Length: 223
Image (cartoon, rainbow, N blue to C red; front, side, top):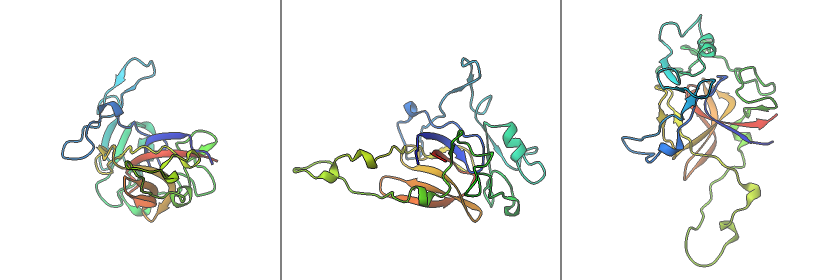
């Protein structure tokens, strides 16, 4: 399988991803006042910038009037692709306020790519993080000292680029841990939650589970 497409802001089950952080603005990734800002996006003419919480990326509570149609927010999400739907109560899903109304097949059932999969033709969200990223491991590399060790060199055939893009929080839609933690979505679910790859400077977890409303990176694989 190949892995050449990397998008940020994949909320499990949604067709459209959200803009990530502008790397040029980040000077702090931890502490009380992290400063990650949304990367600039523009309208169809390419000249007019879409403002956050204005004409561009927006955030709205799933309980806001008009978001839920029937028992889900699917219609609203399709009509408002740049609006992050957050949920502050269980099951912490952008799609429904009750677990009984969740849809476990929004990104496919493991064999068929769904209509709502955000990846382009010929590509899809991986079906299981633990299988797709099962060969991941953490190793200790010497940064200074004398002598040489082949393990300290780069073995390109085993390398891949996985940025620590952080996430957008499930209960607010704002950035978190940009530059210190990375997460990549899978299409697989776990109860009311969803599975993904999670990593930081000391740990890699290829089958991490968390709420579906989190916006994480999406790394497409070839079908």
